[in-house]
Image (cartoon, rainbow, N blue to C red; front, side):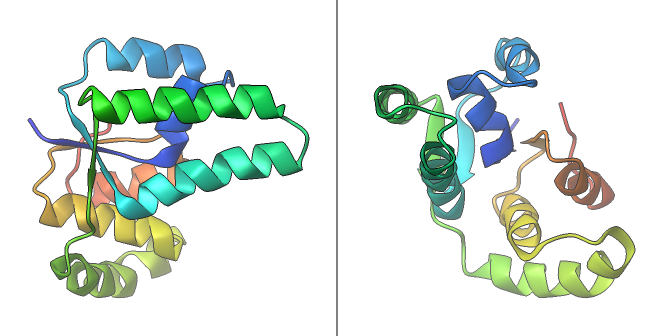
Length: 142
């Protein structure tokens, strides 16, 4: 099984939040590696930066998050993949057909389009709109 992941899920593994326990439990059953596009990688890094800006993380904590994320990449838990060019055509189709119904954001459309092109079966996320879109196009939300 091929699984993609988004920043909302991964971030809960690195920073304690309301979804951290669920993320840890899901990781015990996950088929690895979890594919994360380069766009998703930037979202993780930006989320840490936003937490620093908002004073919700201290610099030492952010350093630990960066180290854990890098470790998961190096150990093959998370595999960073480029967003395939074919994903943009899929994203156009998804934006026309699903966004009017679900109110999805551009990055969510790109994540799901990437998962389709990468032939993923599952998509790990805690973002409800993203989960609705992924489900609508046939991905499983574990």
